[in-house]
Amino acid sequence: MTITKLPVGNVASQSLNFAWSNFGTLLRIGWFPLLASAIFSAVANFPSLANDAAGTTVGGYAIVVLLAGIGATVLWAMFAVAVHRMILLDEPASDEWFYLRFTGQEIRYAIAPFLIGLIPILVLIGVVVLFFGADVISVPESRADTPAIQLLGLFLGIALFVYVAVRLILVMPIIVAEGKIGIRRAWSISKGNFWRLIGAHLLMGMAIIIFVLVFGLLAAFGVYIGSSVGFPIMPIGGGLPAIALTVLGGIISYLFLAFFGTVASLAVLSYSYKALSESDA
Image (tube, rainbow, N blue to C red; front, top):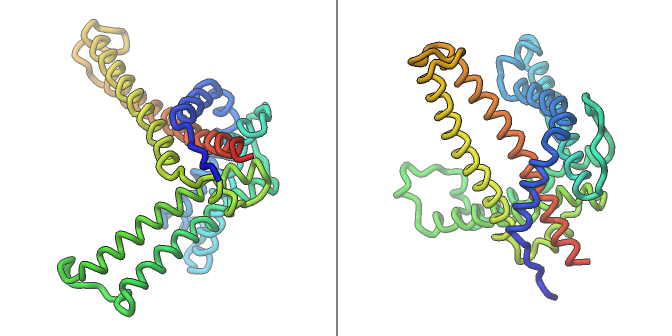
């Protein structure tokens, strides 16, 4: 069987182009589910917020954290599935400003990370138990007290964890394209492409980092020039308006880049699946 090689450069460029050309559309359909997901996630991850919502009971706190975690995951899945559908199914984006879509795809997409995450975790546990045996629950006083063979086993377990997780990452676009949590399918089409899948994400990330650096330098230069020439909102020497403008610009830039990077990462998965599945067909 011929192993299909993922075109890393094409995947990265297609992903960046998709994120850029559809930025406004995706921002329209994504702002509401992502904002709601972030709020739910904050409640689930910050004990003080969960306590305020649950009162003082331990059971109430656990229920609030659980429901908030489920809500955050499902809302994130709504947006992620919408991105995948645009790429994989050529589906036009929704024209809604308050986008909510809850079907079997979103349910499977929300459940899948826990299922496919369990597999590499079990692999890691199996390797650690194999090398550590009964000592797996004991903690050495120092790293020097750990036998070399056990350290080797630990590194091997981590390496296998990463390998399995990367090989199974294409389960996510398979859910949208084929309507199933295709673990065996993802393992099959990703054969021989471990490093290429990592490379596509790294190349996309490097392009974004370069853009951030260039944009940051230009923004800093603009603030400096504006302060020097006495731009109306930037008095000579800087001052509070210039600082406030810089902080506001930093916040907006961070949100823009976080959203852009999220879309580009989802697009990498979709275009990787398309490239490997079309050749596999």
